[in-house]
Length: 302
Length: 302
Image (cartoon, rainbow over the protein chains, first blue to last red):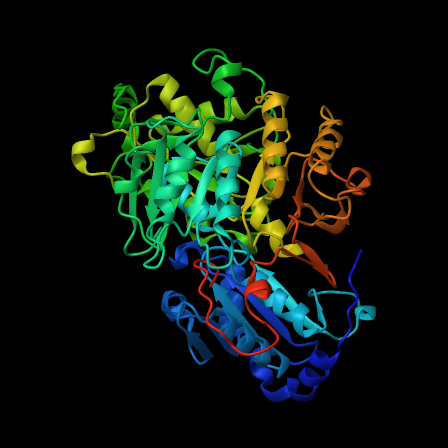
């Protein structure tokens, strides 16, 4: 099952320079590249592990906006910061720094793996044949570059918390960005999710170059879901520019939506109670919630 | 759009007793019920906001196992702890405590909203007609019970980080628990996700009472996806009992899977490189990753 493509170039390069700055990476052990999810943006929602890794890093690579979000943690680390569309450059620069023996962290907002940098960095390692291993891998695994993915609170969890509880039942996450994914694939996934009554979380609903995709997505979803379906619109969750709105599928095309927006399209049971969007797990159907206390036990959901 | 069902009973009850313990909730403002995601289990992955809320709470309600995970944070808080199948009791007790003026936190592992307590608590508020409002709601919203959902790192993000990067493209989350959801609905969602080539994250794959559902799920997915499709199996992510395995769809039924396991079924492009499971975003198709540096810009994924 395990692939065993083998280039130990990375490991050797790293060994050569590893002891350069013992204060930061403490010497010993192979070099490590951390792929870090900083959470939605506010340091109140960044994990202690992410904070520790960023504080100890020699080098931090990231999209300019994300570097600004973690500015309070930057003391003397070297910063590799580029614009939004330069993610391949950032990933290559971070890999080069780590292979040169630096303790390097590359950051994404939200989680590190959900439509984020972990995939690109690992794709690059594979294409370039760089020997990599997980932290704490047994010694017989050799001396590859260590890769630790540090998870963060994803935009879908941060946005859901601000709306109430839209994700208490099955959901599908779809990005409307068609730069790397053919629109036909996106359309097929939206249709399948709508038809099977998933709550649908939409990432990258609109950008300057993609004004129409949201309208097209709404058309697809409306074939399977009524116009009054609740839709949560969260922009800049836990950031200074945070905006939260609950609207309907019919009115969604008029909502203020940009690249920092995540959308939550309810399923057939999603409702709004006061300011809260709620997708019930199904307790009301099975138990008289207002009445006696009953045993349930629906698995995780505790 | 906003529902306006109106019972101010909750608010009045709370006002009466609010000043009971000024040290903890600091007096002033309406009472608040916090619905808190503690993250996967290790305090290294709990947000500072969750930690702060739990530390300051008068009362903490939670499933016994989760109370053990946050034991280091418990100093003098009253604990409402019940077994796994008693989630309705816990939610009702937490609501009662908050309505009586206590600052109360009800905890879920992972995120607070993904198959978790936020949905049940808000469902209960709706059914009982309890006046609720978001923290920081404008004064004209009245004096309902404040509800703050504190997000956490969900099991799907923690598990993905341990596997590598399985969630870099569109994914669907499905729970196999059929206690509150008819199996036909679950089966339809699995089929739709498999057919539309989503990565599939499976929660609650097996319990003592549900031995067969995973086999049935595998049968459905195998109709649309080849037997060698990579599957990540993560149990007890970031806990003492953590186990991580990468296997195949064909071999999944033999894997050691329990209630603390989350499964990650790859899509048609998911691959394994050394110990890492990777779902590419699509850079390799569009750009020669091994060659020159090129502009991309696929939206969130930076």
